[in-house]
Length: 296
Image (cartoon, rainbow, N blue to C red; front, top):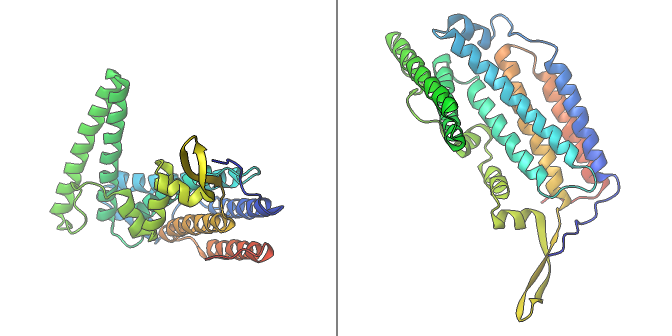
C-alpha cells in the first residue's frame, strides 16, 4: 500500500477553510444576538403551558448543546483540511456532526407537541444513563455504579409521573415514554433523510474495509507480487476532490437546518441564517468552477 495522498491543487484546501470559517463566525454572531424565546413563540408557549416545565426547559437546553457540539465538529473539519490533509478524520468528524444535528432536530422539532418532546427527552435520558451504567461497570467503580443506579431510579419515577400527568389530561396521544429511543440511523433518516451517508461514514468510523477503501483509496496496480508467491493489488491514499466538496456542503446544510429549527422554535428570524447558508454554498460552487471539479 502506498500512503501518498494525491496532491491537491494549490490553495484548494485554503479556499474551503476560508468559507467554513466565515460561515461559523457569521452564524455564531447571529446566534449570540439573543438568548431567550420570543413571547408567543412555540418554545415560549410550551414553557408556559407545559405540565412538566423543568423537563421542557431541559429539552431545549440539550437541543442547544447538541447543536453546539455539531458546530464544534465542523470547526474540526475545517482544521483538518490544512495541508497535508488528513484522510479519515474529516469523515469521522462529519459522522459526529450528522448524529448531533439529527438528535437536536429530533428533540427541537417544531412539528411535535410538548408531550411528545418531553417523552423523547425521557427516552433519550434513559438510553444515555444505560450507556453511563455500562461505562461505570467497565471501570468497576462501585461509587459511580451506585450513583448511576440512583439516577436511573429517579428517572423512572419522573417518567412514571409524566405518563400519569399526560394521561390525566387525556393527552396520551404523544409518543409512549416507555418505548426505547429509535436507533441513530432511524433518527438520521427521519430528520436529515441521509441514511445512506450515515451508514457510509459509520463504516469508516468503525473500520469497515469496504467503506475505508471506497472513500480513501484507489487501486494503482493489480497483479503485483506483494509477497513472494503472493500477488495482489496496490492501494494508494486518494481522496477525490468532490468528496471534500460534498463533505463541506452537507456539513453546512445539516448544521444550518439544525440552527433554523431552534430559531423557528424561539420565534427568531431565521432568514439571515438561510442567507448565510446560500452564500456559503454559492462560494463552494465557485471553488468547483475555479478548480474545474466534476461533481457526479
